[in-house]
Image 1 (cartoon, rainbow, N blue to C red):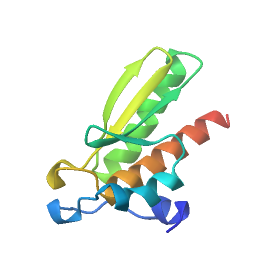
Image 2 (tube, rainbow, N blue to C red):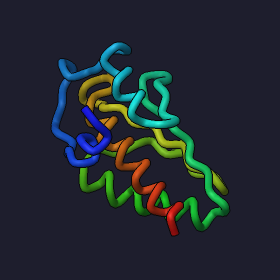
Image 3 (tube, rainbow, N blue to C red):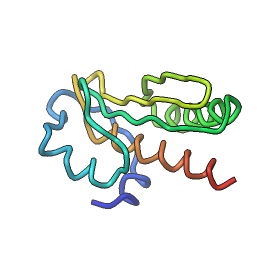
Length: 114
């Protein structure tokens, strides 16, 4: 499994049998810089120069995750946005969460490149 595998994949409907335990999450977390498992979700906080950049990221991320039909919890502040993914239908973290985490990182990287 590579980062490109996650970026090229799409979310699927997953149930409890697809929930990942800590050992199964480890290779995914190793691929994604800054993501941690905490309180039943994978989480990362992105920082920005100002509120406009924060909202631009949130809007771009919303478009991406809506296409995946897999929506995170967001905490939006002036110059940062905390993102938390879990798969409610599975009662924990699944591959879908890592697919969307990889795509969130890509959205952030695109914004940073501008």
